[in-house]
Length: 278
Image (cartoon, rainbow, N blue to C red):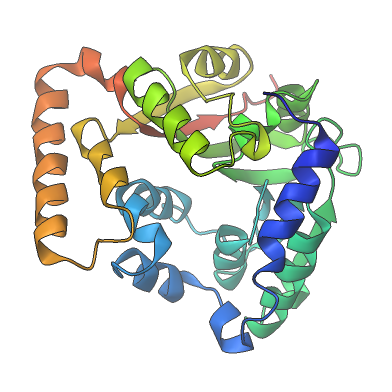
């Protein structure tokens, strides 16, 4: 069931309002905090530690100090705040006004408010940004929300400078078995319309990106290891962690032997560059 931008905004306003009662110390974000959370079985990000560990390496593969970055569909703003703590000039975009207020508070307590600006708006109209304004755009689990809006992809490409880099971390939606499991989970969680989750990032979207960007590199991960979703909230157990680690190692071997299975993975990191003007 598709939902409107207004319904999506209201949903996420409710989600992000839950963070308002947290202490300033709990809202600090930088590279050290993200690395610590990735290694913490009690933290929600631990479930996707391989996905976001890859993202961290990609984002920091080159110095970012002085770069103009856009955290696209930023939510709580972890990644933009991390980049700002590394010296980047970070802009945050999200549909939720509540998220933007949260990001500004987090920037203040993280000591990077002088390098941060926050913009509330949907992805179909980025007219507040100039052509080629950003050196780096990062979208974490955001693209599949915005693809339903007209002009979203064209606007994303427009505001990326020639030679600039786009990094995407997403759920990968080519596997019909995983997709069926996701739909069941949404129904059981009573959030079937969670921000347009009926749209999943897949190979068709990578093809669309390839039509306007170059050097599109994809890193799929999580085939058998997507069973980790069954153990959500139970990663503190050593047995569970060892089991998931075994599945992840099995995936590495299987995908190396059968590369054709990569498109059926459950998660993906995409890195692309905008062609330089000739």
